[in-house]
Amino acid sequence: MTDRAANPPARAPLAPGAPFIGLAARMRARPLQTLEQAFRDTGDGEAVFIRLGPYKATIFRHPDLIKRIFVDNAANYTKQTRGYLKARLVLGDGLVTSEGELWQRQRRIATPAFHRQRIAAFAEIMVSATEKMTGTWASQCEPANGTTIDIFRELMNVTLHIAVQTLIGIPAGKELDDVSAAVTEVLERTNDIITNPLSLPLWFPLPKYARFKSSLRVLDEFVYSAIESKRRKPAATESADLLSMLLAARDEQTGEGMSDRQLRDEAVTILIAGHETTANALSWAIWLLGEHPDMQQRAFEEVSAVIGKRSAGIEHLPALKFTRAVAEEAMRLYPPAWMIGRRAICDDTIGPYTIRADEFALISPYLTHRHPGLWDDPAKFDPGRFLDGRSERLPKFAYMPFGGGMRFCIGASFAMIQATLMLATMIRRVCFERVTEQHVEPYAMITLRPKHGILMQAQPRKM
Image (cartoon, rainbow, N blue to C red; front, side, top):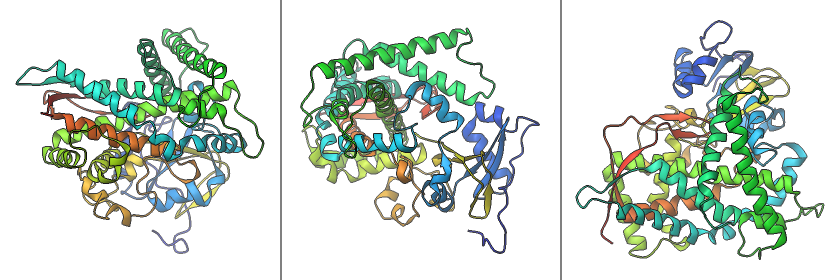
């Protein structure tokens, strides 16, 4: 890092952009490429200052600078950004968007529900749903060619079923098709509102806003119905879903529980985050394994040796080291949370750079995970980096698929258990090959998903 005394703090170098709007149009159209180009245009340093229409932001990509925002001076960085404000249209004041005393209280109440021992009880549901999905593929197969599937669509569907059962505690039924469509609509529309600084207010009579409001009603009715049902008939918390645990939980300091509105916000947050991010991570993992058949074979051999012909279980997790590393490496290359934003309350000095009050501090795990000064051959798919100690030698915040600091994702353990068990189940039962006539492109919405899905050839393995 630059010596501060020799080089007094100054703004990060300005990325060239269009008059008045800066990089706003390019960020809306191709955000990942625009960010990478901004660093190249300014000398591949550790931070870049950009203009996004009326907004000013600095993107930081080195872990030492990120630590200042996440930890050392975290109190100076609020979530009062355009992105989080617009996300509240859907998430309300859930753990992702709330701040201050409300967030601290909600986090205290929610934390016991996410203990690893309780999450482990959901493993059977995760594996059973994945086996049912792969069984459906097998029934559709041609003897020689297998079957062609959109792995992203399949995983979005199955992870929603898993989330509804484990997080909300409702048996998966036909209404999930409506819920799934509603989740997709509200996420796409929220992303559109966030990335368009000239977007009109929601009261404006546009068809897309009507669809957004209708979809939000579907989601709300589903969640409020679940809350009402659980208040009438509480479940035993030892084996309950996470919503039941949250409903029964009490703040250790005040003895208070959550209101229906607070439960709704947390339920919608964990429902969306609990299936969208895992589906994205697993889709990219399967895509990468399809490109690297040697890695897929290594994963298959590990799973076969550890699990055999049984179903994967929580007891197998410690031995599924390479399988977990595949998921970790997929999230390095394609982190579901590709951008994290904060707004500076006061002027601050971050390494050799300065940021001013009311400006945005942006952190992109996508950029940091591909930093050539941190990672060996950063564009290469190499799960071994999470097995041989290379990743452990990196500074904190070089790898942050679940954020960092006190706002580290409360569902990280849930996500890794689910991703590892589902990936092991799929690899044990199916051999994946890429369909060559397709262009797979990362689509930087609120999460990083494949823009047009991912077609894969799925050939059942002999059990």
